[in-house]
Image (cartoon, rainbow, N blue to C red; front, side, top):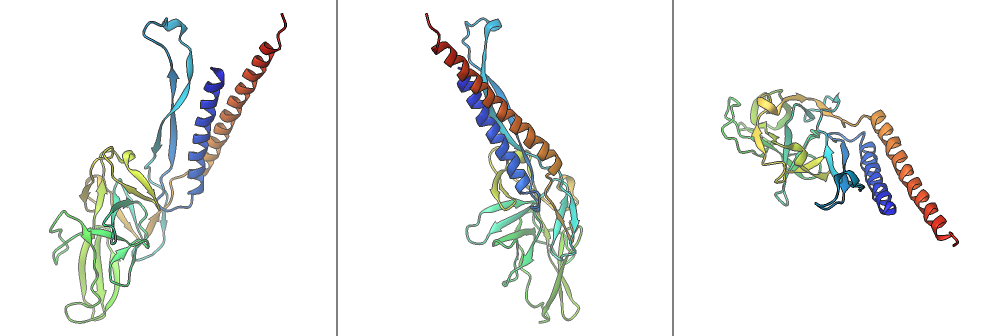
Length: 270
């Protein structure tokens, strides 16, 4: 029994090492959120077993939980770089598959067709607005910046305000508000599924996304010209790495001790 108990513990320590290594590998990934492993003890006993004589049979992985704490904010000055100081997520949608993704990485740019996208073909979603910039709907959609305005003047640049208003400027001095950045929030963000590239998908555990605009409620405020860095604390991860390594070594030693005891019993002479 001790062999399997320690073997399970070694596998758990290996899982913990994998989670910590993933955190360390993404210390420079914008919008990345660190994770931590949780374990639970395993007890094997029947209802008739004396509770004073129950022996545990090891531990099992309980969950790998994401930490959505705010990372450091880095000022970049990019016109379409954005960071969220709150619980909201940027919403993007794939032009090819229609899949909706959520991200904290606000590094966006305009593509050749005038849509704002993340570099992977996922278009930033915004709520439509009227001429005064007031939302006319709560349903987010793709943002298209026209190449020319109503007067025929060519596009000159784009800016994003702290309230999420995306304003296109044109060569004749005219400006048009094309939408307001839509932010999503979830009742249980730790239930979001990681899909890579600092993107998440909603699940039944996270609940459906609720949409709003920057500065409203739990969505948080928008910081234009900035990006949110990873929330990984490298010193903390290195300490956790040492702890996981010691845990692995201790359980390996327990297996070695059990082997020596078994060998001693086998070598007994009558």
